Image 1 (tube, helix red, strand yellow):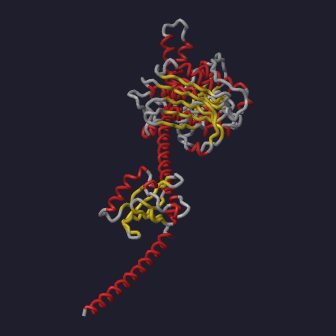
Image 2 (cartoon, helix red, strand yellow):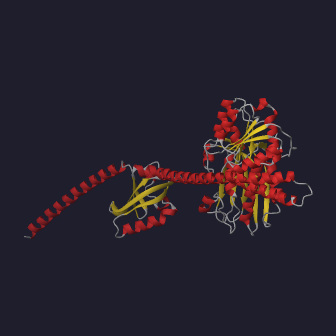
Image 3 (cartoon, helix red, strand yellow):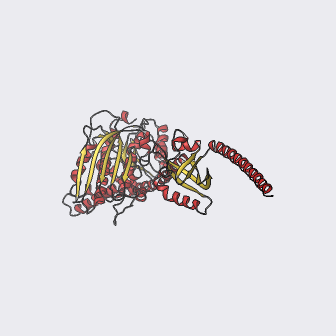
Length: 543
């Protein structure tokens, strides 16, 4: 009886062993099919147990930068997880070894064998591998998608900033235009009063004070136009080193007494084509800004110049890159060891009237931006809180030949004119004051309130007028349209264009069209006389 029972138990045992062997074969086949499927998966799979890599599919091997699977097996998994992601990853792993069935998806960073960082979306789940408790980590490489997204966000931010600055520029330009017309009245009337006033008049000093105040207001308008990128430019080939030395000498008494100036000017330096007054303003604002950043603490203000080759990639990283041309650029580097700026402050640093100080200084860096933009240049900022700030301003190297020249202003002697001038301006005050100026110079003046009225007057008597003094910006018919129609009436019409906007850009726009000259608003009677003399001096040159 015992023998029969033993035989039955043996048979059952053999049957059980056969079943287990069959199941083992099935498991091996399932494992092989799983691994074959996983090996060819389009996403990365890594299985690790107790922190040791036990398996990696082909995508995982490639993503980590290994040459084969064997190069990863047996290695610790932790060094492949970026320090910024380790805390989150370790918490997920601990939970999966506990009761949690899966972890993720989570945005993490991995480190390849070559040191490159990958942005990944990782998903984990507990599993067994060769009988051991393990974690199966699946991750998708989204590095390229993240890069594209960052570029998109940066581009949108740049576009928004450019649109904001453009809108503010239009506003500043419009205000400056109207203000310039008012200044024509103030400065012109004061100038006429001085010319009519006896030298010993007790009122002369007060009127001269009005002239000085009006000229200061003109400088403020210049800053607004500079921010708008429409500032009046007197273009010359300039040596930026000479301008820097001049401004440093003038500013030494006004900067922080605790700041040490470190000046390194490269020699020789190529010329830039620029407006000297506006470049001086850039230098002044940057040095003043650096001094304010140093404040009452001991610090250094570094002022360097040099020349560098800028390719498209470098220029693309500058502030408000407007598809600048590759090539050589002269740079002005102004740095400080002051408080520095965080990213949010840097985003607003060129906003008009923005300041981190209790009392701001007006347009400041906004004017710098407008000036640099008007000169087809660029700005790069390097700053961190507590580590100071550096502004690098780039100006394209001049393509013009010839000697360097400096800007000089001379006061010509007033001349007597007997020509007939058609004065066209939509502002009544400007017509009255400019008309009085012209009459004081001996001119016969006919007034027109807009382009249409000017055309009607000129059509009636085209040979009567020796010159048309024509405002550029008028409602209904602007100066450019009026000028074209005047030329249809008389091809050799002489027109002296007047505006508060950028002379350089306007003259380039009218190049080859026979314009007799340009008169910048606001103007004094001496400048008006000089422009009239040039415009009326040679008929061939003005036609």
